Length: 227
Image 1 (cartoon, rainbow, N blue to C red):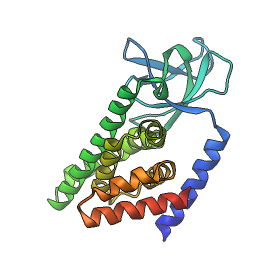
Image 2: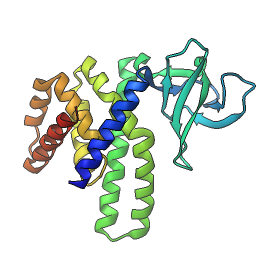
Image 3: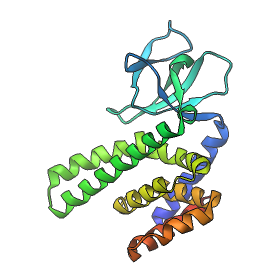
Image 4: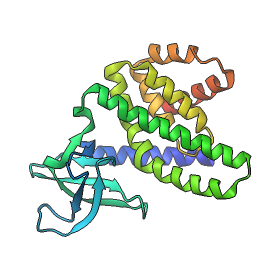
């Protein structure tokens, strides 16, 4: 019950944020150097406060006429949010990439999350506390920096593509990660169901493991409550 109450609070917070920053878009860095700097203000004269690599995700507030875009990302070391400005020439919106590239990015993140979850389970079963603690920390920051941002974007991709292979990969990742406290996957699959219920039901029927199927159905129901 406490977990569900926390999730309801989480949904309310996300709703408030998304309403306030309705123009926020998921993006990556497009820079031949492999990274770019985040500055404290709109211009090169402002101090550099962080660096973001081309493999990292950023959220961009496009509600501006300036060439310097306000961004939010996660510092992998401190795990703190970093807010600053990047020139628009260095920003590449995920939705502007071709669908093949979008699929590659989504699949890579889901696959990595699945591997981390399985490694966590194995270390727990083997009572390997050193590996468990290390993997837990790695998984925790991966969730915030990569998994949750891509889950937020996935319904938009699915709405356009009807990509059932991504849905099956999402199912298997959710199942591998079933002991997590992260409720974002429920919200994501619920949104996909709202957009294309027949497609999601068709993919559910393909699941042979009864326990897995019941778990996914439960997550869909909870995701619908969140919406």
